Image (cartoon, rainbow, N blue to C red; front, side, top):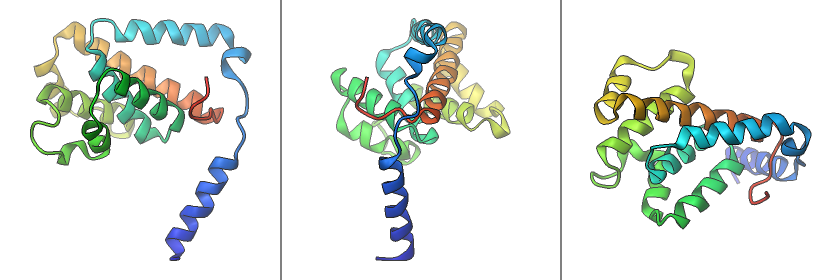
Length: 164
């Protein structure tokens, strides 16, 4: 085993052995209910399959196993293909036709919102605006900041994938 493989194995063991810290829904019920309402409002008017792709990609970037697991399962229930789920981490390199131009614009926007350090570039914003009307674009931005908030809650509390 190489040093890199050894370090990854040790890190994976530490992550899987780390217990959940608290049950957020029980401990902060008002905030949790507000997040549920915000999440529902953010999704309104958007294609559910697009929402799941954005949520999965954002969760990948943020290292949120709980949200990634949940949204991958939701995507499969909504008939999302394995190919599109498996290629999501490398969506820019995916063959033409795997993701629509509209989905690519949404994923690019989601990535820049998630990696907010440099802001959202004019090119990425214009690309998204070319594929989404103003109201849809506002909803898409809302989905992006909502899943980022969920990721931060679940990573901070060590929410375990596959649990409710």
